[in-house]
Length: 321
Image 1 (cartoon, rainbow, N blue to C red):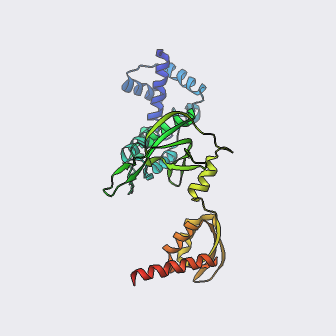
Image 2: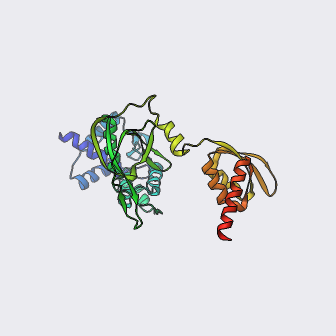
Image 3: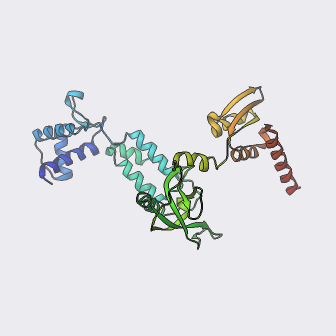
């Protein structure tokens, strides 16, 4: 690489690391930073010329004509608020190990100036996770992407957690045609057709191991595969259909119900003590919600669901009486 190209990159790195709208660098400041960080002595005219060259590459740099003080890099891959949001998301993920989380967050923070980076590094991220993390998750995703792009089958082994809390692989190898990976319900899934079966199914990527690419073409699926529709229907909604349920809940449960069901709720009527609501959702979700709030929630309809809850309560009563 020629000397001119190298010095332009050095100049860009100085602006990226040491300038922002609150830390504007004069031409002399830039010269001093280039000399101290990279051992490069750049003339003022070369600084002006190289900044113009960066601007011609659509890199936005504020200058004297804009602020009457000096230069700073405006155009960044991520805004500081973007980095904070992404770091929060990485830290909150319970499928990413602490070491990988720190590595990813470090790369995100390095997109900012040293001044913004110091502020971001002071933030504390607490990972509250009880899950066993598969350290091969991202390797598995890369390998599966290769198989999907090449259109070949793979063999995998499913994993379970034994009673000693160790992740162990099952003995049986499963051969599948992989069609797509997707992120749904807080997990990575592989959409497949198992050998010998006619319907699509899915595997949790962090619960498979010993992935091998086979020299066998995938089986074509009649009608094609729509990963988005499949994930909504069979992963998020667990293959269930949405139905309408009416509940009467206490006032204190309203915010919690909105948090759980969002726009799928409509209010039928309310008093100073209770709210009657209609919820469009799947059976398993409403069942879990009602049984978790028995003291503050009454099923109004449908009748078969009301009977189901009554029988559930009675069976639980018999176990403890």
